Image (cartoon, rainbow, N blue to C red; front, side, top):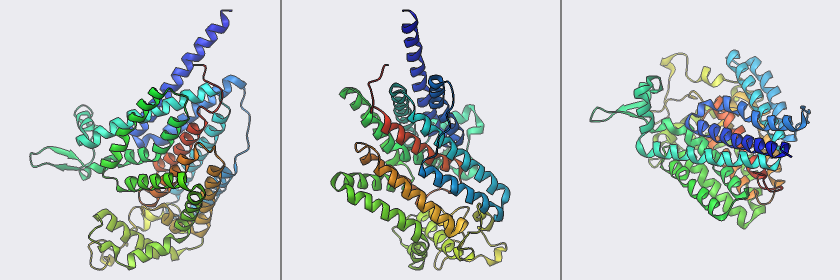
Length: 431
């Protein structure tokens, strides 16, 4: 008789540790987003450990169509790396991409085999970590990164380079607001999955309201931040959410058409924006003007290798003319005609570095994800469509396709969106 209560006590302790593990990982991700590649490996640990504890062995599984498309794409990336002008970076990029995809695949498979109380513990931990991370970023945005500035006094290695600092008239060293853009991006990517978890968990009305209020600092941080792309992505996500509530079929079709259009037509779109000199529009802020020039120039470079691309990581090699005397500028502007360190648009970067073959694979992956969302539980779909749209918008105007933390963030979105969808869908928790 004493064995069963003791076993229940140990299980409750393990569930609390699972919640703390997930919450701690989310908080670390939002405080230090560049740790994402390490954190996605840790994502596997808890769900897989619970499965092994129950089944006593690991059972091989067959990847879903989405992941089959990912593995085929990685195979092409490995081939593409062979003609990259930077083969070492290209090879490491392919290796990182494979680890991320395999980690997400194994995590999602393990989640599907976990008990309801384990799923609930992880989902609660996700919400707690997201709320705490949102509070941290909100405070940093509104305080001019006070926490980091204070931390630098004790740990000087946390100080950014001079390029990312400014000096106030009073002689105080200030940190540039864009230093928070990585964290704000992750916050925006995970906002809809957090809403999925909040809606799915079996909570009292009071607890649900408190957690909902806890999401407000995250929203305030995004809206007050300097990262315009995250703001646009959240706006697009809100739009598709309300459209889905009113016309579900139209929202699904619009998402599919939008994905196909941005993937297939980004080259002529970018070329047209540049040709119309939109970079000179006074209502655009400077970084947006510069991106239009980068997009216009890069769209013209796609013709160098339209079928197979110039190779992974080629943008950093070819981003400027070898001879500074050959540098030219967009007409009527001070913006150099170059690709930049990266294109700030993964669709355009895919066309340039991977060619039409890579773009076809990217298109296929997106369409299969859309198909998977359409088959998800109806209660989660109003938030799953915004999750996809926010991801697609952020991918269109922000960081490099190959940045490890950026690639990993997309994988984490998938993990937590699925986790939220699974929460509260089976028998009540034993916690």
